[in-house]
Image (tube, rainbow, N blue to C red; front, side, top):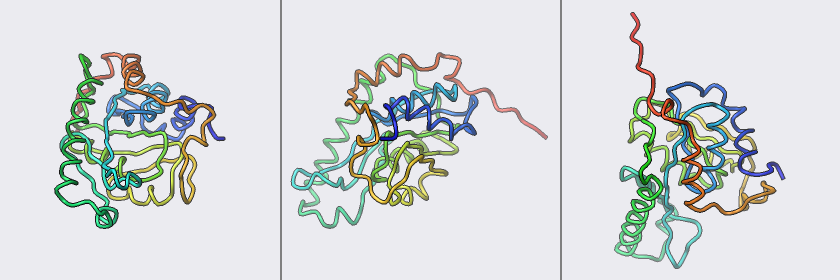
Length: 224
């Protein structure tokens, strides 16, 4: 057992992210448990907090592992090796993706209902999840952050698998992981308290997040 709960993990993770402080930083948690870790990171770093929805793509016949993931701005990441081994036809894979895309849009709208999101363009984005067993979701989140105009993307997690971290090269500018291992099959085994988090919990974290002063980056100063 490494962490008491997600907040404890976030506080410890923040200790390795002290270089990422200031008005040009936004911490983004992946909706679900990642949001709780991200909330603690943002509090420690005193930076803006946001959340991003990423949905994994799975088939009923072979739900694990996922063959891809989708995120905001039409982002789509597919594991070609996994997709090629699926018995499912192309038309069915397209239907699954369309269905997940509709669900992602509705979920994103519900999480943000009436709320203002921090500006992401021109800023450094720190994407946080509770664990990195595979790279697919984090890769999709990185690409979505860049699609929003981020100038630098960092991925951070309390625990992760070495293969997942290696796969993030090319999508993230930097990966920070406190504890790595060859394979990660049970993220919950690293937490004493690993209760499921629903979207109501995520909305509450967003309501508790930084105030309006952190939502808009300071104007860039020209030199020379």
